[in-house]
Length: 276
Ligand code: NAI
Image (cartoon, rainbow, N blue to C red; front, side, top):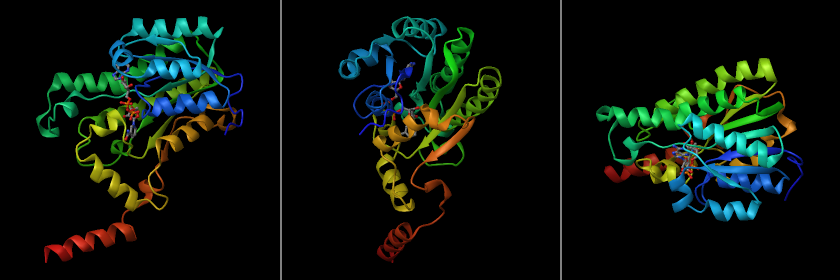
């Protein structure tokens, strides 16, 4: 159901690969809320993923870009402004990838070229996007920029690998750019720290099924789904959240405030009994 939260809003959404992607769900909800937007992803993601289906569904043009390349980002922004008829109201950055995770390199045996790529794709791309948008003056006053992050930026979670470092940097960029963009243009920048979710990127994390089960048992409200993430995203993109900026907001059913729950303790005790 739509509430017209994004009526007359225009935006750019990066990172929809398939119908599980957080960006896909966000685009679908934004469309339901009345937004008009362009979509962007890499050439290979466009070729091998399903973004064309999303584009048709949301009446959105797709602009290919490698988000680590300034020239590509410039093109996405310039073309989006042309297609949408001027400055945009919102930008969603939903981009992440680690070759170390993909190639099963452990955190104490990282390939440093891969590590730099992880940082570039998963964190620096956000800075590049913001810097290009600011230089092109592409976002309207009181616009909203959003990225997706994970609690591994604050706490050590087995298997999250170098993505944890990338997320820490991503959240730092959110604050530091948020100050400048807020001060000069009244544009807000926030990150949503989402529960582990079975997407293509999420599924690459070592032991992800166990992690999802654990966080489900630990969170009083249970894990947040991708659809719920999209619901919250449209609020952050809307005028209802105009004074929220430079924040990392946990959207995780309460997991981030828990240390032990009854459900997790019960399961833990069961394992101990079996061991005895
Ligand atoms: P996904 O695999 O559907 O999306 C990741 C996207 O990044 C893909 O569309 C991919 O093509 C894009 N991408 C990779 N390299 C790129 C590049 N060089 N230029 C442009 N785009 C590039 O997975 P998901 O889960 O939707 O990921 C979106 C964001 O949400 C990521 O930042 C991820 O870390 C974050 N996140 C995911 C969680 C999960 O458990 N799935 C939890 C918390 C945050």
